Length: 544
Image 1 (cartoon, rainbow, N blue to C red):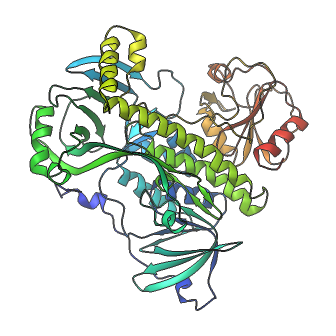
Image 2 (cartoon, one colour; image 1 turned 180 degrees about the horizontal axis):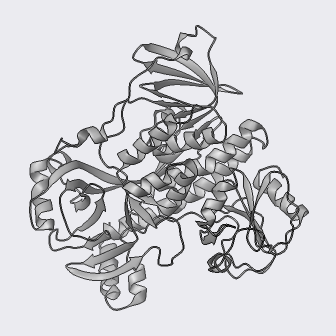
């Protein structure tokens, strides 16, 4: 990775001190046993640790480095990720710093082909996306970790050995002061694409590595471009290839340029060779480099994310191309999905088999992301004359027809997955809309009893960290199981004055939605009974 202007580097290289822990003084077989050890303090590992700690679980978080990673890396964080981060207490800070956007434009040559709006409707707390350098996201998450005594974050603690036992895992850890060993009921590997834990369990990635090369350059400059995602096919400044432009905070702009497959990666990433390319694109050379990198697409995943008591999440479990913002956001959805399930298993309120649903649901999501990412890559970088001809025809049709625009693929943006899962209770009544079982909750504006404006996602946070029933009961009492919180909509509770909540949930008096602790719909009812709610709760918690 080449670094240019160094004046901003400390922002991306916050260092944390190594500290000795009492666990390192234990001798022989007398090792500390932790409920959960998370390996990797990136966005996924940090978010998972915070989620578990907020649920009351003590977490040991290990990272082999002593600083937040260099470079912007992931920059696009989705509405769903922001809603998860809201529940972790960091969402507002991310939005305040990030660049909010929802409009994308696709160009062919110098001409605008079409544009799209990722969140055209009003009444959502969070935007479709923010752009925020990954090192900021990690810094805010580390700050939040520091507020939670249940998390022990140990820098420069590198896992070098793993022994799987029947009821726990033993890890060997290398530190600046030498090795030590610990035990864990569960280990979650969030240690990235080059995961050492994946190698330790003998698991491999299966999938495709694309030969096309792409150059990333983050440049600092003053520009009047709007806060939109701009993507070009065959731009005049980079003929025959593709290009992408995105705004980040601090007057930093992300530029992606497709290169020839046989381009020399060492030469191409040298600042003196990158500068002319960027200058041709911008029409000037009044910019400084923040970060330069070169990469190839990879669309691969593990066959299973569960290996006994070792669980994989994020890039350690699956990889996709960066176009579409599917990498980091998918990893955060892994953390969101796993946290509540692992908490229930540790508390023994659900059987260990509940964790199998993590593999089921997130494997489906990984397959979907890989499929969409592969299609984007094939369209942007055709592998055969037939694919090249198809792209040419589609781009031509897109200038004149709506169906042609829908066929253009410049990296379709990440959306929450809809799970086909045994945790869902199938619909048995008539529904004409609303999120179905296995889909994530949809936000809408509401008012609190005193008239204060709020959102459904806020009410879900206020309901606690467990199951919740969104009930359009209009004052009618519902007999709930003890562990289900009520989110009442109507005269006795929260107000849907704008009518958007009822419209988005196809609701009429009596309608109710049972939400899982991760905000996904477990079941929905036209007229819920206690027995129906209990049955759906048992199924959603893996106890049926």
